[in-house]
Length: 558
Image: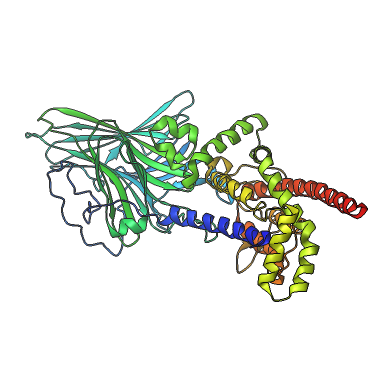
């Protein structure tokens, strides 16, 4: 096997690894057990381990949320809408983040429009005639706004059951925070003791926020416990079997590209995490907890938190243990995490994520310089041998065995290892993959400008518009990337096999098509890496060429 075949093997292996990693992120199976909700969308499992869980209900063909009066809330981080039916959080805009492709509009994280996105946060109580998420609440006002100089905004909703139980559901929004406190105050005004349970759940469809065909992303359930650590739950697995997980810690929520929402209860409180398929395309993920007995005339307060915002490392680490793991860098997280730390450190100095990517690429190139130099030196030596290899091919014709023997003898005479150009590249592949997923998964890149026409490093470069019908963006960075690959091909030894030579000629075109769909930040990294590689390869080629000429002169003078 000659060096060019090995290079092709490395390229295709790298592509397969990336595709496999993407497939794993989308389809990896997760542990799941028994079903948990009834046809009303209210969890029916009990928290105690000795209580039998009812059979799963028949899944309805359609799903429709009941609606009542809308309560509008505005803070420095949110524009929210709470429905009087159940006190559900039905709409949530993030004021610090803009819509993808439209910076004139705020990013809508949650909404109940079902077109196709359906994303709602619900809570409710179970037991006696306690209010579920289908019961009507009242509020003192229809509009709430966080005033200047205030750090908290309280929205209180109330209802009274026929038996006299008073329930207040209280949202507390905080300035400069994506964490919302969601508290229940229960006064047992009935004549008998009650045993309430509280549930927190997220309703989501299985179709929206799945990324593109070229750049798929994961959207689905997730939970964390100290015992199991971080687990993802894709919708396909939820459809087959529901989750039922008893624990006294952790959180459960829903993750999508760049953003996460999670229900967080107090540590030590018993809870059961569950999932359920409510309709053909609607699923719920949630948590159910028993609150114990409440005597007649007694009061109980139940506290929880709901995080709804970006997957920002520095924020998530302060909210709940394991929440920062939702920033998914794939199976090479151990490499990607320190890479992001270095990138963030550089950004804190240069204050431009594009410049930070360039400088990080330079640092990585410097780190791997010895390996790269060894690889490029081997390829330069093979380049010098190309005319002799071509002559041997013409001499031996179709006699592959003699051709192979002659090649091995030539390599031995010239002290060249044909594997030397590829093995150092293989060592660097894990770093390349890690950097790929780190750049793709970092919300910090979202709407981060570089220079000139690059306004969003997380979006494809569209300087020259988009091709109709196939909806393919055409940008300058991918074109430059393709051109750099052409230059690299010219610097590398030319394959003696005509088929391999043709493959290497069209490889830049093929990769350019892929890079048209890649985020600009990723293309910028690869372009800078290629430019540095070209400079290094050109320099080494010149050195090896001079050494080859000197050797030929030395042999001629003997």
